[in-house]
Image (cartoon, rainbow, N blue to C red; front, side):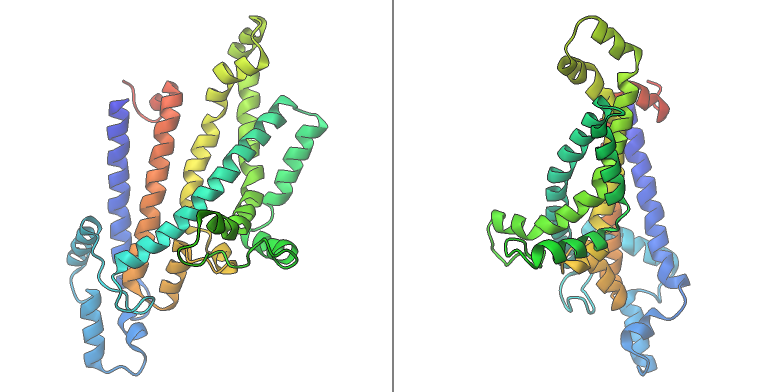
Length: 321
């Protein structure tokens, strides 16, 4: 297991190095002059040189790469040009990451138990009306994009009922209950999109486990359904679900741009979009790096958890110890 963890950490570092190279190259090979976009079309040549030097674009690619790598380890990405003018980039990004973390954690607390329970019930009631209801309802909701689900919830819940809040961002220094009240509609939108997906993954893994020899043997030994699920089924059936949740966690942090726009929520996806619109490269680089590192960390945790649940998975991932 230790060899597997070391191997997986080294793979994460290689992925981070590749990501740094890509982020360094993009401003150098992308069409257009980033300095002119920031300074404006009527900027003087002296002003363009000044902006280029502040961005580090007049350095060699290797120097730019080393400065970006140093920024990651020192958490010093300079100051924002336009999104939050004069503010340290790391403060701006960390605030947005914190807001996204609140939304993601609340969404996971609601989404995972309901989706997993739905998948387990559908598998246990396979080919019954309960199974078909869960699967078809999940499929129907999964076909709806998250921002459409958000607009739907705003129209049918937030407008007629004062309890549901239109703004996802709660007032400063509000209580936890108030924050959850503001986050409720975005979380429901996430639940609508992901319920069917996670429930179907859980259902498929559970059916495979239920049809296995060890499950049949456990039932033949006279164990109750609850004991068979707890001791033999759950550990194997939930491995695909854990792997899927690990890969989707990164998306939940950085991919809900449209949903954050619908609810005016100041998450990291919204921040990256504003940075692109205003050509704020320091904020853009730090925001993309933050999302990528969170994605790698979530995937790493999911792989380690799957490997812990199933030693055969470690072999398939390259650990022969």
